Every structure is written in C-alpha cells, then in structure tokens.
Length: 172
Image 1 (cartoon, rainbow, N blue to C red):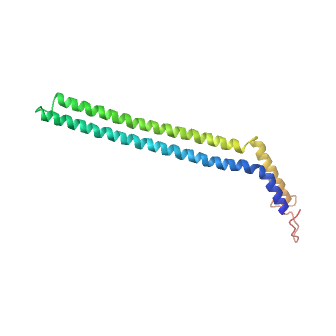
Image 2 (cartoon, rainbow, N blue to C red):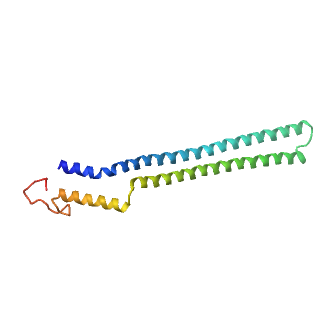
Image 3 (tube, helix red, strand yellow):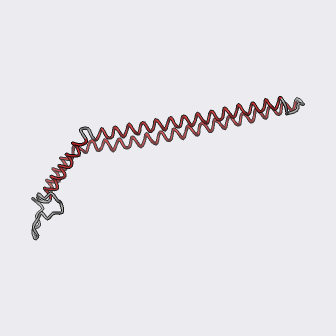
C-alpha cells in the first residue's frame, strides 16, 4: 500500500512545482491589487487636501479684498464685489479641477492594478498549464483511474465490491 502511495506521489510530483508557482502567483496578484487600491486611495486623499488648501487660500484672498475695500472707505458692492466673486469662482474651478485630477489618477491606479491582476492570473494559468490543458487533465484522470483500479482490485467503480465478503486484503 505504501509503495502505491509513493508511486502515486511520484506520478503527481510533476504537478507540484507548477502548483507552487500558481500559489506564489496568487500572492503576487493579491499584492498588486492591494497596492493599486492603496495608491488610488492616496490619490483621492491628496487631491482632497490640495482642494481644501485652495478653498482656504481663496477665503483668505476674498477676506483680504473685503478688508482692503472697507479700509479704503469704498462700498463692498459693484466692482469690488464683482472682483471678489470672480476670485471665489476661479478658486472653486481650481478646487474642482484638483478633485477631478485626483479621481482620474485614482482610476488610472485602479486600471493599472486590474491589468496587473489580469496579467498575474494569465501567468498563473501558463505556469500551471505548461503543456496542453486537455492533456494535463487527461493525464490526471488516467492516473486517478489507474490508482482507483489498483486500490479497488481492478474494478472501475470504486463502490463496486472488489473483495469478496470475508477477506480483507489491501493488496490487489
């Protein structure tokens, strides 16, 4: 029995190395996916921080314009108000542009991550199926049937009685 198991393990040994490559490839795929998501999140965070800085600077600029207009004794309506509105509008456009750029960069990171995952999955498949997948599956099936026949005394059906009642032999 142990010689049969040893023989079976030797027969399947040719599939262990490719299977280990596949397992290693799975780790690489997961790492690439996590890195892409982390980069995407960081891009969003950075763009939000930059947008907040633009908003704060715009509020300071408009506040300074209001203070200068009031200090000059001018009314804060008419032309000074138009200048303040233009300043606020430009700042808002800058803020939205930065946020959009952050989202675009995040999408780019996600796309690159998806491409790395797809490439990793393809590599995992080619590492395992170094020859024709049909021949590998056929080879595995033939070995499994042969092992089953040797363990069941030649019966093709593993549930078919292969040993007459009353005898308990493990060898064929």
